[in-house]
Image 1 (tube, rainbow, N blue to C red):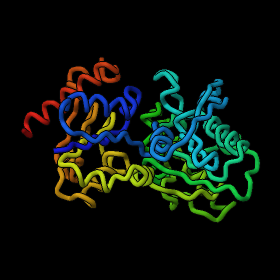
Image 2 (image 1 turned 30 degrees about the vertical axis):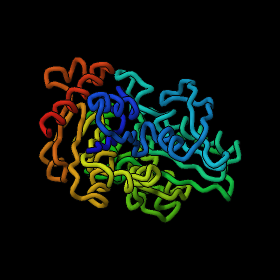
Image 3 (image 1 turned 90 degrees about the vertical axis):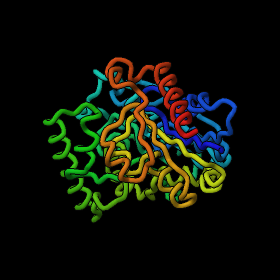
Length: 343
């Protein structure tokens, strides 16, 4: 029985290829299909460049706190298309936990990468929305851009389809993980509502009706409303690029995963995309979800996962949750235990 290992990164700890390698190490001697994935966040450019062929370019930019960084993006199709991750210059992993400040963090670095791509003469920009430390509705990004060529097409790939505002909107859902307390979330909600009102008056477009509007701290809305970007579910585009439909039919078990699994997983993250695609193309194959940390287990099981496994021992969640070697060992052990019980 071939096992399909279709995992996302364990954010802040393992890249998607590293997570897949850890799972594969537990299946030595067995037939496996390795499939590192991204939903638009970390690893999006690497995943598409690996599948479609491409080269990487490094350019100067600024991180969410305005510090100079060198960030890279991919060029595909002989330089015709740039693939940019918002996480590359505006990502959570660029900041220490004590540096998180969603009320002041800026997406300017992502705009600088887009501007650099324009200078390289690209005709399309594919931008992965996810993994950011910012909540500025794309204000920094727009500030960094000169007027764009009329022929330029922008495609945005969101990792979570959440609205800009409201109880299920970006401030409420993503604000706390980016460092906002209760008052900070309320302030972000006020800012986002004011921005949506300004956009409605200027462009006649309701930002909250745009797919993926709240992704990447509201960058999704800025791209859709101000730049006319075409919006796509990131995991669907990636699964098509890696020919998931054909490869899953050759397997008898699918193992997917991410760093933290909870109800947000069901908004368009890699594991849920893998689950849905498996049910469409190979409905009888079990799908197991691994995560460093699991919350909302019953909701995840109700969504259709055959098993949901927290690989980190409960007593180690606070101390070793993001330790790279510890995470590898935990994934290997969890996969070994899973296969043992299935055998």
